[in-house]
Length: 389
Image 1 (cartoon, helix red, strand yellow):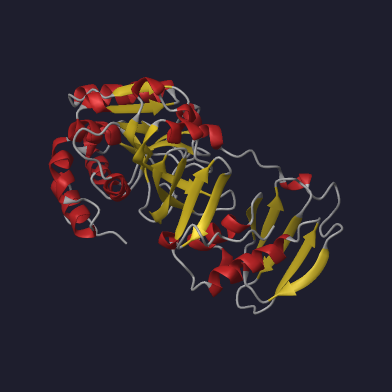
Image 2 (cartoon, one colour):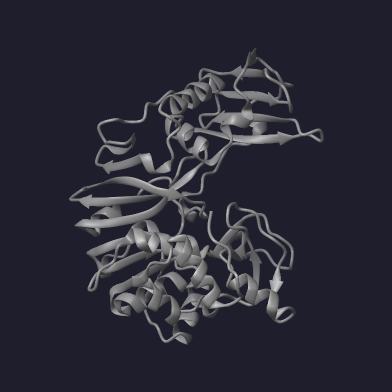
């Protein structure tokens, strides 16, 4: 929970960020010198601090006071929908660029632990604010930022020039890093990933840090803070996060109707009941813990008017599915499972493992990346998270 801004403007937001612990004293001069409003377009869709919903559009030309309140509130601001194909005032289908929540911006910069002389690679330029902050702190010659969308990169460059800051902005695939500026002391991603690109490790000095939002296919996401040691990177997660996925790692998931093979539910499924409520597995950290154990699984929800819903779980191999029916006030829930993976059984096993470990938060989990792939662990690399699928 972050502190609320008591007054509109940069001073009020700074007070809130300092009180929450996100904005530390070494970043305060840079915060004052590189104000957020210089990096926010005239049309924005304000979000909420603890979630992924967006509010209606705020147009600076029509309501400058509302725009100013949004910009200097501790909230994310969606600045692009649907990779730029959306137009109009309404909400698009999928946010595709934003100005991140200031609390998260400065928390991640604290995780990055930059020192004078460090070279930094940023993945995901967005509006340009984050790399501008780094450029002010370290010098623009020490900052490289990669943005896949040419229009977004153009806007970020204009914002940075207007602020008198000139980090190198590259239009390209962020997974590849940028060898022209390597090696780097720090790498920071402002988009989420499901797999750490090999190039990021290869282009980081031994002892350097990679700070990136990392999430499972199933759900849940947290900031990974990995220390590079040669060809390996390893470290703990630091905090919960909810970022837009790196475009080249967006999953393409099979449709629901691909699983029932033209049959009506329950098709060839096996019926059972469970005392574990589908609502119990829906929290952000619960999804994260379950997803670490259930590779290749994802879910959707089918909601009904009375507050009931069906939680559908699928495997990416398109061979297995499960449905679990939630009804308010019930203490037993109907389940149907089909295919070689018993996905609800896996969900239960993963949930009860997490519960048996004391319901750990994100900061007890860690990640190791090496030539053998990626391995999640709890408390120590010697204690890997079990795989139930």
